[in-house]
Each structure stands twice: as C-alpha cells, then as structure tokens.
Length: 92
Image (cartoon, rainbow, N blue to C red; front, side, top):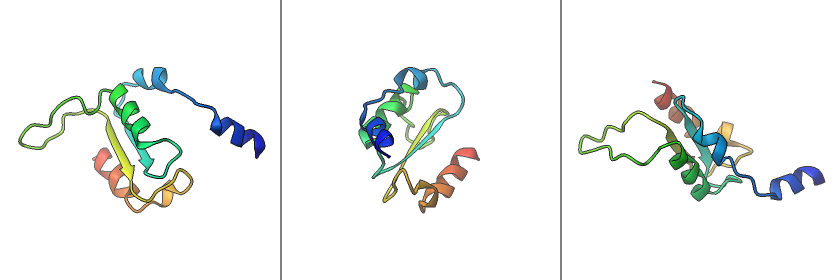
C-alpha cells in the first residue's frame, strides 16, 4: 500500500504517448478522478480534440472525444451512471 501511495503521489506525464495515438480515442474521467479535469482537457487537446468548431449544425468533426462523468471516481467509474451511454454514443 505504501509503494502504491508513493507512486500515485509522483507526477506523471503521458503527453508523448497521447500525442502519438491515431485511432479513434475516447478519454473518460470522473470529475472526482485522480486526474484533474484540467489535465484531462490537456490530454484531449494533445489528441487534437477541441480544436475545431462544430459549426451551426452542431456536428462534431471526427476525432477524439472527452467525457468527464459527474460524481465519478477512478475507483468506481465502471459503475458511473453515464458510462454506458457515453461509450455507446462514441462507438456508434
């Protein structure tokens, strides 16, 4: 437990790995996750997300997606209420 706690307290940066991903990518975090919403948005931007306006028709261009689920944590995200519909909408 102590080693895991020490590891979680160390800053980590996935920027290099994320920038290299090219398949359709859905990033899902909880708003009470161990990764802050700001860091989640930064990861999303590294994938090219949030850089194009959907226009008046509201259709998002193809590309990565970011979901931050309310009331969800890293430990219980599989039970989060919005998880299944978020994943289903992305995979359609």
